[in-house]
Length: 364
Length: 88
Image (cartoon, rainbow over all chains, first blue to last red; front, side, top):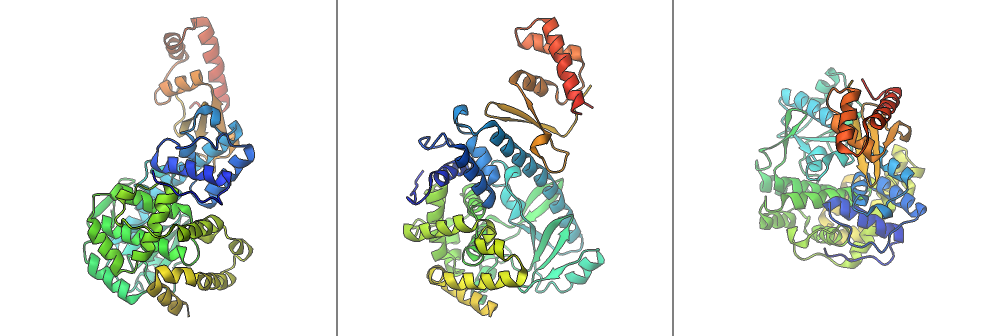
């Protein structure tokens, strides 16, 4: 397993990554020299797992330690309660996903599940992945305008968003309806996605709570996960869960798609340079086997360390960044987001110039 | 007797912990710790109807323990499980 450790990582952070990698790949822990951890260091690991929404993976990871290197009994119990909560939420989430699929499909909206449970299935323990909201791509819909009154008629209170998507709450869970399969801002890249995927994104299904739910084909899945990751990394922030999703998707879909076709797709959709950076990150910090990646030329370690520092500072979708916690109101947060995007431009323009320019135009 | 559905046994390191999966948020006060022998009994009987005597017999067959000691332990354990609402 190739790895490039960042010397600036603390003992707790290094231990956290060892446990995370062990849980991600269900493999032995490669280095015991950091263990045993102190109570405080275990608390730090617990906190990091929470802010990066990878509690389930770290819970699985520390079970690869010998018993004498385990956390204290009270901390083990703390982890068990988290695991139990995640399993309960997973069952509810499966049911809610199946319910909303049936509702949308019955209306002829041709929903495809994006991310979420579709990605959870790539893990050894899908029930331990933290789930956020339910995202549906509605195939063939130029506009979702007609969907709005229908949702209102069903008793929901839908909200329209600037990107043309619609969200509503179903049994306490946020559901989003999208008209783009891949979230890119550049019209050229969108057109490339349409040309590349054509109708080739269809045909796969996933069984959830006795319901067969449509999911995108492997190559479409990798492009949409990658674009989602890039968008968040260069805007509001991204956590390790999204990188873990990408790593598991590459691993599980390896040899189920044409790697050269994916590399071409990354080039045509403006994801190529970013992918080199992201691949370096996956190899260095998450122990991703390099031969399972479609691009053999990862980017410079220096930028990878910069990305790592950003990820550790900001956590899941930037929600653990200081500004998010201080200013969690819509208007103020938007200002912070815009400032954040501008501040990152010297970095992001190197990896996704066209996308970032289009993002700035869209924000203006 | 039957162990309630929706109770799940977790084995983490040397710890055996039962969690009520039907409850809302799992707080640590809803966890129930077990030793290895009790956890083995749980595994053997968690999805079937059983009597105290069947448990006694199972313990005698699985461990080097006489019937009187096993019966005493089983009855005490069943009382505890009932007190915590773990038996339907």
